[in-house]
Length: 243
Image 1 (tube, rainbow, N blue to C red):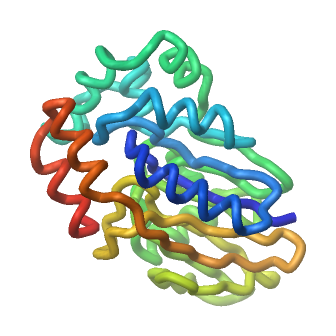
Image 2 (image 1 turned 90 degrees about the vertical axis):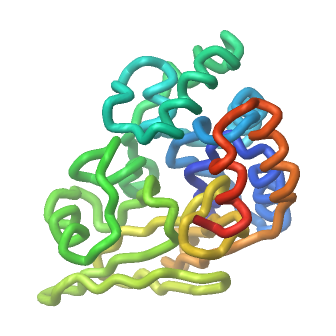
């Protein structure tokens, strides 16, 4: 089975549609979304509608939970909090109901699914090997998928060895073998690894391999949607730089 792994769409319809077009040409059987459908971007209803249509599994991210009132805005930056407040007033009841039914952790085909990490599914940013080691000590699955950091990366622990990690660019392929793994597909709607293209990943559960993908999208259109919503200008500007 081949699965498309996506995360952190952040109300960026232009990026989400581009990734879905790419997925449609990639012979995958399911789409798993690791959360944060909304926040930052200007088209939350459209992105939730696309997730409802295409995602077999969908988790809640911290921004989704903030919009529904399930987490506080205390730990959000000023711009992130502003986007959450705007989103609360902009979304439809149908969108709100869908977000309210999501959870930040799950499992499918013996793969652990977390928005942030196995230790802390809502908030933990796993960007270093030391923290990944503690997550691997916690997780009950050999392989887990995580989002939240907006960086495409992988962490591996072979039997008897320490964790190693690597950022993953376009076309990077990982053989999953018998090691323990944490895999992050990167962000569809707001990449933060210096590459502004939308990120996603193909997970092949039959061959035990993961391939990292990037695709171009209409960044100017996504930025204009943010400006039309009168959200902070920095949220529009950062898309061009992948930061």
